Image (cartoon, rainbow, N blue to C red; front, side):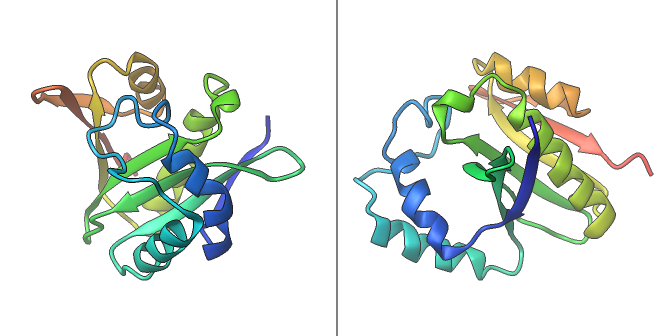
Length: 157
């Protein structure tokens, strides 16, 4: 399946607000919405995070119809590193390798465009599918925390 990423836009809120209200999407995360998210709340949030200088946020799209299925982002960007985040909001697209492809795309952006030295993430130790996906993208576990692993990928260039 064709996978690409594009910068998020405010109108993405019309889709992504639904994902924020689906507990299955947030099953393995520590941070999840603590209230019902409306389109307006999502638009306000998107506008705010898209303006942050130390973050790069993208929509994950698939197929020739360019269906918006999730988000991938780099946060806490410094000269050398950034924290990675991803989720596939459309549950019908889970387990199809889309997250792995989107991860590879944003790592290419991180290393070639932003010239970062490493990218790290935190993943729930029970999220075996995500860990396998990250390992395919050269992330390695560097630390075991309470319920999470810290994983890192280092720019080989």
